[in-house]
Image (tube, rainbow, N blue to C red; front, top):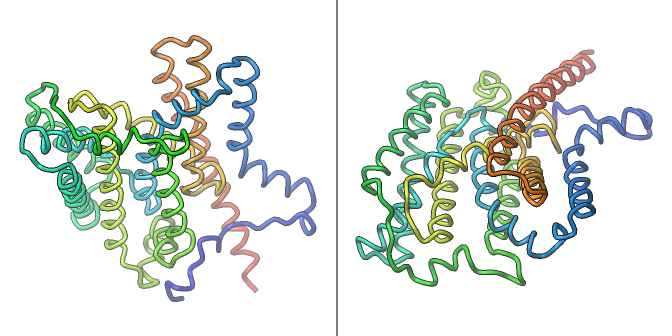
Length: 348
């Protein structure tokens, strides 16, 4: 089998209303779109109980504050597709947002050059992590935890543990604060990135090879797929997207400080894990990640408008992470069961 013939849906059970009946068809649709339905129900419930929730102001606040988490969740999704976890979606933005500001304030770089430098350095850092995982054969969790902690220490050293404050160009600040028809531009960044990743992962040989590596590395190698190349490439792409998100955080806050960033890691990973339970249950997918982040954003916004305390958000994120991992494990077991069923049917 050549790698061009591997289909991303090859091992998914296909259920049709005509052949399998309404009950089985409805069951699969509910499994696929339960979180999306829940997302819509939450909007209806919060809008009915809290009139201020159904407003343009609430929409703008959610999109402005959660777009960075959505970008980081999509960044985490890329290595997850090849079966790896990258913790630097939380650690990385600590240094990247500080560097985006200090390059302009302390070293006199233009904002365009500062952004380019941050993206290049983040790509090199992703390359380093990819080499640790793919070539040095270090567990991805351990490798990114170690390198991420080191990066955080560098951020503390670079900033001296103090805030980095200075005059930043309006054009740089508009990278986050600009609006298009009342919608924060950060939401359009998420849309562009999501569509691009969806097209690559679901409709190109590269994406199918990534899923093959994540699903069964040994089988992927036997089919001539370069596991190391896709593994390293996924870390580079994830790190670049994390670097871009760091730039957006710098543009949003206008201040560089090492305390910013760590709060982003948990909800980003929760969104990616939760996304593997919907749309394409049992496998990490782009639109599932977007739905997962939407659940978090809407749930937290609604609870806060009900008067929830400051500790509600981390509690909600932690509980949702446990739930998402449980659901992801269940969906994966269902997927493996379907895979075995399909393979048995294919045996003459």
